[in-house]
Length: 235
Image 1 (tube, one colour):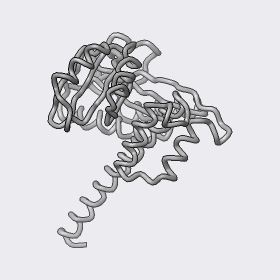
Image 2 (spheres, rainbow, N blue to C red):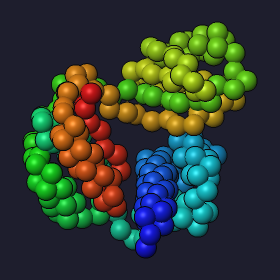
Image 3 (cartoon, helix red, strand yellow):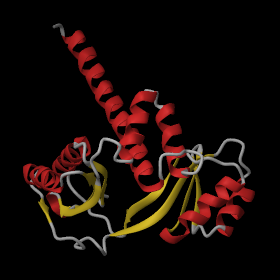
Image 4 (spheres, rainbow, N blue to C red):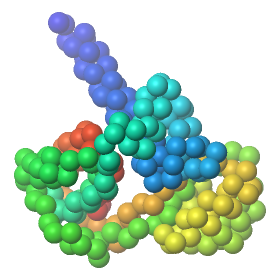
C-alpha cells in the first residue's frame, strides 16, 4: 500500500471508529432512558430525546428498538445500575456508570482497564467531593428568543443558561430536572441532549503523556458494552 493509500485508509479507519463510538453512545442513551422511564416515547421524555438523537446520527431503527427492549429486560435478563470510582494516571478522577446483568464480569473488566493504564479503582464514595450531579440540557438555539427562554428556564429552577455557538446549555440542581423538563414540554422545545451529569468541582492538570493514557483508559471503558457513561476531572 502506498503512502497516500495508507493515509486514506488510516483516515477512513479513524472515521469509522468515530462513527461506531457515536452509534454506541446514542444507543446507550436509548437503553438508559428506556430502563429508567419506560419504553413509550410519548410518556418518557428522555427516551424521546435519546431516540431523536440516535435517528439524527442515522442509527438504524432495528438497533434503536433493540436498545429500548434491552432497557426493559425483554431478553429475560435484568440489568442493575452500578458505579465505579477510581483514579487514572496522574491522579485524575474517573467516575464510571454501568448497567449490567453480571456485576462480577463488569467489575473485573473495569478493574483490568484501570490496571492496564496505570490507574486503580477506589471504594464507593471516594469521589463524592470531586463530582457534583447537575441537571443539564442542550437545546438548539435557532428560532428561540434568548430573553424569553432564559426567563422560562430560571422560572423552572435553572441556575445557569448559556448560549454557546448554536446551542443553549441549561444547568440546574439535580432536583429541578423534572421542572425544567416540564417547562420545555410546555413551551414545545425538545432538547438535543438532557440528563443528570456529573460535573467536576475540582480539576486536575496533566502532561501530554498522562493525557494520552487517560484518553486510552476512557476509550477502553466506553467500548465496554456494560459501561453507560464515563466522567473525568481532567483539565
